[in-house]
Image (tube, rainbow, N blue to C red; front, top):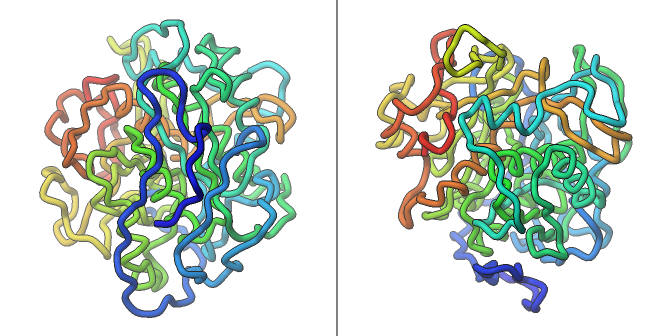
Length: 429
């Protein structure tokens, strides 16, 4: 895969150094790409950009988009705050929800804090010092110029060590790509305020930070939310050799889409030794890449404080989180407790996604602190847990350790097929 020349700015400076990007193998293209992605069907099934000066990497998948929804290349990065997450099935949608009743505040007035999340999932107290641990890569679409500053506000508010470009903890890579349809708005959709990719990026960086405050963060911003652009971004993220890659977005397998998710897109998630997570979705469908056997699919729960339990919290399956069986992929050998017999079962693990109570996140594009939810919360958080454990295995793909260590997971109650375990600190990994 072609990349721009690497410079000294392409490495994180703290030891151990952030590996230089290397070319990624590319699978042969088979057949012509087809128009795809019908509207999302609302059925219960499964699932699921920062300061200026980031590196620019060209998109390289041959000038065609799978969805043919957007031009392949645009010289101007589209602003993430104008690109709606809800794509109506024509492109990849991100899986973040906004609590419409919480409003915007200048201090975190509601929503769970980083300390709450660490308590709920059994993580130890945060230590100080400059983060110099493993790298968590976050793949999203479009440019969020406020990503690094939003991250700084979140981490400072909740006592997490600073993660900046200057101290070598944070890096942003912008892919060249297509422009977004502009005009994101704040009207309600079914009681949930519409969100943009700016919200997604702010949430992803915050959740990765909450799970692993000592990890370094690589944000890779795809030029568009078509699957080709995002698959390119995943391959680019992998070329930096992170411990994990988080994807809080997806496209439905249904509506005739599955045959059009081509081998190149599927191969973009096959990176042995890198723990790749994908949110299971908020629309009640089986989504790709959550359905891929190369990823850990993260579903959603409602997390509640519960003094009657030793844990102090309890979880039930979130009604909007999808669960079901893939029509694209067979059951992986490592999925030993699959709820499906003919296809890969989604999700593999679940955690808070309900936007009530939701999580507190700072977003300058929103004007302050907002309360967010959706299965987008879980993908970066679980990626953070994988990176913190840093023992994924050089030949590993998918989620074999989750199934091998299922006794370490917290119980999730709910309907059949949705009662997947939730992470319990690093013991789950």
